Length: 554
Image 1 (cartoon, rainbow, N blue to C red):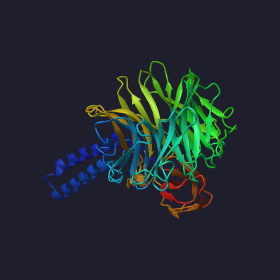
Image 2: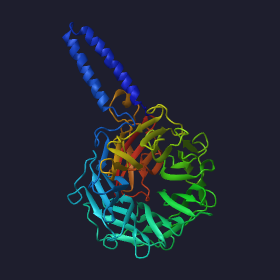
Image 3: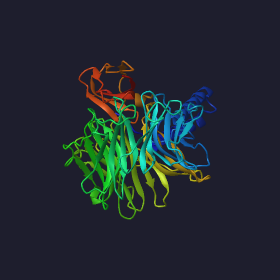
């Protein structure tokens, strides 16, 4: 069990205590100096409680500038953040684009507190130009088990725009031993760009792309060998195209590799009139699987209105939870939360059996754009949304839903916490990346526009989310101590605990479920589909839940 407290409730209770103590102190001031000193000590302890309490959804004041980090390599040019990854030591990296005489790739590294980390060749960032003189676009990144980084995007080739994958060493230098002097260029026909990248357990590299033709587009999956050469066991030539019947547009949004190697591909598809959430399932050889959805595809639009996908996670119950946006009338967008199983069938329990939630704060001309979701350790879902009010001002909006899809009204202000920027300093561009941290905090990243320079810059919020403070209230609701060994692990791990284990999940650093087991024994085999790196073992027993980090090193 996990207890959510609203900020106002905690402050109200502590405020009442302070008022009572004020009255007491007034009465005893001249009577008993010893009692007065004890009361003053209690006041000091309460003040510390206010300062240190991790109220879910509030800004973590120890990060950046009171919970908000803004960064730019120079104020002379604009920066466009596109992806972020958490590192095993608590630091994090962000990748994106920087605009100068031409547009180049940028990789920046930060300490856990949001301060720049100067370990990239003596600086906190590196800039890269895969194809000299051309505009380069960056959309995705992946950190390899050895700490090296893959950057994925596109650049102008000889005849069209091609996918570019760039490999960077841990010190920020280009890995010239990989591909062609550190880069691999992929031409899948027309104009294409990499949107998502993932390294498989066997070292192969899976790339989700969008291919653009003459007023058309479609989703394309590419798989490379570890050395950057095409994997010809994947659809014959390393490239697998995904096309829906009647589709004129198909833009890849996300992908998920299931245990066993099957791949779920998520995108937004359109016939030129209606946009829909579209999903397909491929086997490990890159071939479409007919036993998925209807005729091997899943399509969904809410109430017959255009609906776009924005992100996807696999939950601890092996369901696919998708965030999206419904385009309503009067320039009013609603947030969408859709639950689908891995067979392409809408969940018949979530959201009172409908399988989908539509959230619209008001029916006015404002937007609620669900951008990402993560599963909390108590099974609830934390949704990050870009809220645009009727005055076109942008805010970070956070909402919690329980496992059945009910909005948790005990969270924040009637279920919502809203963070609005100081517009004299910056305005929010778009927030699209969310990564949970092992200390119960969450990083939310995107872009901002500096009010003074009128240039775009990196923006990161760090929020308190799951309270891990050692207090009487919290300790009564958390799980008993467990021991995970060996750590690092290769083929298996064991759990030592005093209570019977019911369920076990392995979750990666981005909050996605990599594997799960029923708690029938104390030793668990790690699937070959799990890549090397940092994971978290979530253990559920009759007494509660616990989470422990584990490193996989095969």
